[in-house]
Length: 186
Length: 186
Image (cartoon, rainbow over all chains, first blue to last red; front, side):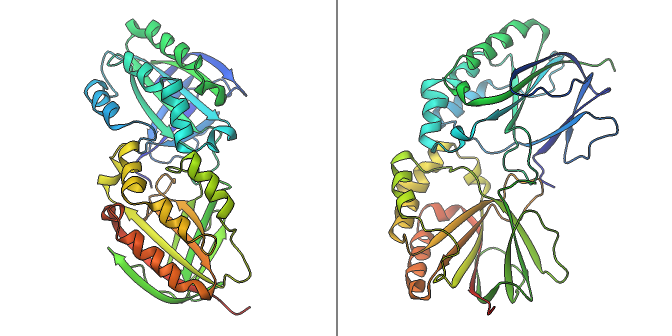
């Protein structure tokens, strides 16, 4: 089993209660009441409406000078004050994936400022990116992005998404779901 | 099933007969008499000594100007004269994978001329790269590189490998096996 693999399940119960689900582009995911994030490969639990897999991996676009700044500002997952989360699965178009590395970097950062925009919201917003495209199974999304933040930073998180969705990079997004979550009562 | 997934099996029988096996770095693979390349996910056939999985994926380092030249020169797999092949599985070190994109590109091409060296041997040597690192299962290698060529180009192929193995990029290779093959009699 790949030690960097995580599964996200949508069902009636789980550690994170769904507070809102929005389909930004493409087909919606079936509506669920709760989401769980589980390490390792999983078979869909009984009653799960969906199970999404992704692996954390090496950086694809970050450059040396950016990484140094990111490392000093990026918060860890699981902060006690970060009682809200968002799961945002994204699929990009074939047109994106046939671009060369320098073309994708140009759009991602020089045109769209993806890293610069994200940096503005650190250390408030914790984030972990999972890649789905090179898994053994065919997955419905290319990326699963997981965010955690405190209730005081909901507006900042909405601003972050609005900035990214307004970018040239997002013209290559053909499916995106935005699932907002809060920690279920223990 | 990921439509870009391929499996390579090593056993007593298969479409490609093993003519030589060399371990360049790290642990050897168990010796086998034949190799098969199969599309899709496979369970190891009875008697197989090993099964390696990899997916073709988007380019990681190639830039626009390089891609245009590659596309005009790269031959397809399965040419009737290409009766020889090589399967070269490679694993790179953690030090490689924690480098940022610009650091890896610098080593890969500006320092090591990986693409430039490969280009010299086109269209003689056909090549397909399979990625293993972001599969669902933990795989023993990061890449499976598959080459096909005619008997007249064995020396050129050896030169290609010698040039790459002499590069700065190869200091990050911690496991490499070199399995030479010829088409089994039909």
